[in-house]
Length: 85
Image (cartoon, rainbow, N blue to C red; front, side):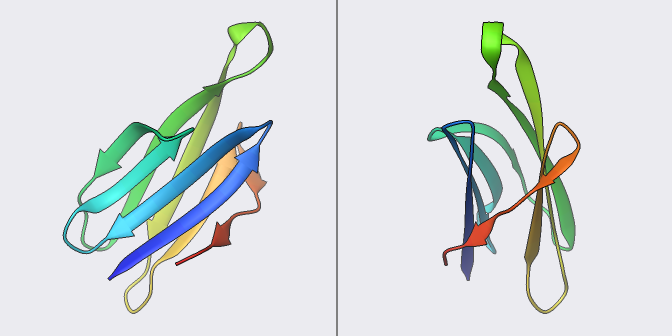
């Protein structure tokens, strides 16, 4: 089973993919920034570039037993994310 979540932050597309067999992946503008293989929960980290090429931190938390849920944080602020698959 595969789940995909997407969000947009300052014109940057953030995508998180969870797959039972290929693990979890975090993409920013279609560039892979982090990946992990975990059975129960996982934290993915990455960044986007803001003004003056300053790094803005991204963190995605995935977890659950019967269904996988995802939370997205940009600079420690929770950001709305939409599950598309």
